[in-house]
Image (cartoon, rainbow, N blue to C red):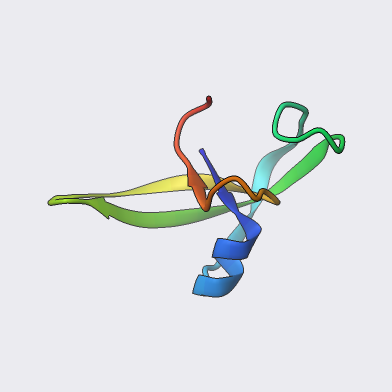
Length: 69
């Protein structure tokens, strides 16, 4: 699960260091993205509510990406 750095900044969410930092190769064509932060995000879809831990990444496609495409 990933969420954008822009969303984290706009909502003022608190990040934590990633326990095992890694690099993403598949997210964009500009090269590797280093993932070294996580954030817990609460969300709802209709009546369903949940929270999920997401890796914070610089991405423009969307604000939150659940699962891997």
